Image (cartoon, rainbow, N blue to C red; front, side, top):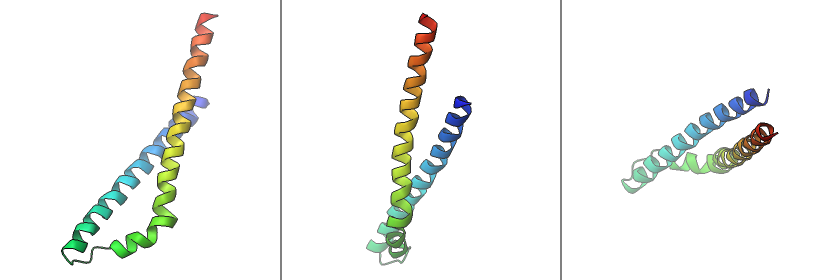
Length: 84
């Protein structure tokens, strides 16, 4: 059960990571567009920063910490079980 839950968590974090990378790519391209006076959606990106991108980054960080702690606890419990 816990392995399945960790698998789902890792899959969700991977999708979230791809979303954050795409958002960063959009930001980088939009900034380049701003310097060349080409509208590539930087204003829209700014509007979506707080309601969409900040939570995605926060979820990614929290999920990574939870996944790491869960893996560490699972490893420690496995070591204790094998030593007994």
